[in-house]
Image (cartoon, rainbow, N blue to C red; front, side, top):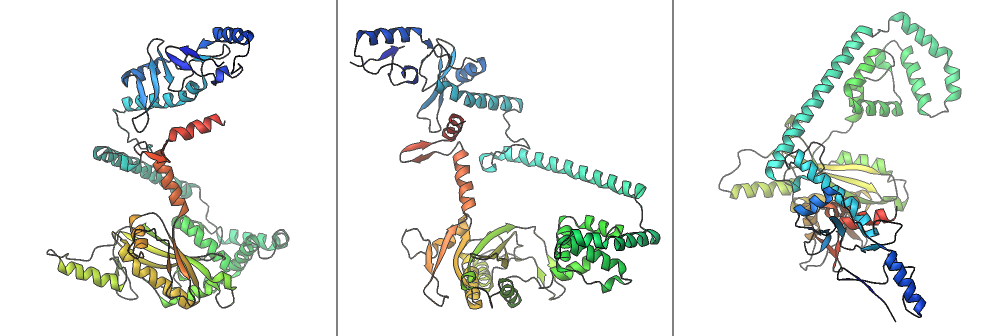
Length: 489
């Protein structure tokens, strides 16, 4: 014989946690007596009796629904003025007051109450400067308020930075000590006396030893123009100047250490003239960086990474070529097509549009540490059709250099998905590879999205309460992840 317990017109299965110690099948009168005594000693689950939880459920018609609105996840027990989970077991052992389901749902109730309190304090405004609500989930008035608050916060930070800069300059002016000729000679003598100690503590080839030798050599020269800096020292100075150009110049002018001038650093950074699109000089530089003449065959396999970066609209005069740069330029074919499209329009644009973003194509080694920005194209409103020609031009030039291009990696933007779909033969099948026509042997070129962007997209869709996700007919909710995390703590 089997047994069941009925409470408030609800049937409680014998498999519940509270009945786990009881026999599932009645085999004797002793079993019946034991079950009756145990159930008689059980107490009613208290649920979540907080007044704020009860008020929250009262304002929601006594129930909280899931994201789809088809299933109740919590309800208000008016007879006992408490909030219960839809999976509440009703009965618990005398040693506890809450069932496990009500206990797990309590943090969700606290979060809902906190959200209500925040909305009440801010007038139902979700656009605090510290808010992480995505812009796509905000209405137009909310976006305007967010922009205004972010602008005010930025102005406040700028004033704070200006105040600190003025304070620092005043401190340097009041307490700064200039290195005169006498102090300079003392420092030079100290360096010469401690050279042996530094050479013993810093092994050959280390940055500390290179830095010391450069400082010693620079202080001994009468003409700073004859100084020849070590490449590692130049790289460190370039990194330091990249962090703060004004701090680098102030450190150099202080005389505490000898550093190359910004004009010298510019000669290193502008060794190859920056050009739009492809360049033979860049091809030669890539060939040297990849060491194609002596590298192993497997180190020649690379992939292309294409990404669009937003830039500030501006026009710059190039004194070497006399050209004005800053307009869109996605290659000759795309420029001709764009000009022809503008000719067909009734209202022709007066000027070429200024570039709002930059398409950058990067070469990444699969079996080598090669990371090389290969080509860049200023653009605006980039589409997949415009990316087609630069992509295959890159593949052709790299294959001609002797590299083996195996794939193209992009993020999940609509333009990149359009680029992949252009290689489809007309069917609706998912395109993930295409035959590389520029390869010497029969080899495919594979398309794939950037895994970090895919994981971020899944995370955003999962955490967005306005999206409804299913898998095999079952709902996927962020609450499931929270409950799993709390149950495993």
